[in-house]
Length: 143
Image (cartoon, rainbow, N blue to C red; front, side):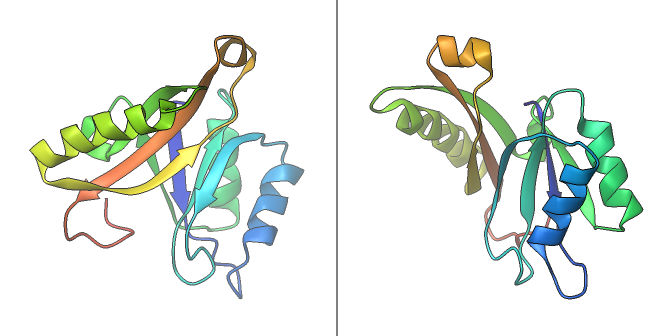
């Protein structure tokens, strides 16, 4: 869960169901998905299962969905992966750390994506969380 694809589900008309159906038909397993205003010009955030990133991108390219890729290991992408403890306050601690870092950079949290833990994460009572941040004053689709 070290990559996130942000896309606009802009078939005609915008249609999240159609996009997710195309990914499913291609065999892409999504381990996290989210977004806001996704059929009103917003972005849909997708996290394919590890190893299926290229397959997901191929589907988006084939059907001409505008998209961009964000990587956890690139701090300038604004994407942060936190493994939240499955306990009271676990998510808060993830957001608290991101907020401290953001204040230092002049950034704000754009959105949060809670993923499905794999078997090892489940056993460790950890939940993968993507926290996507951007510089203050930027529009939703700015990178």
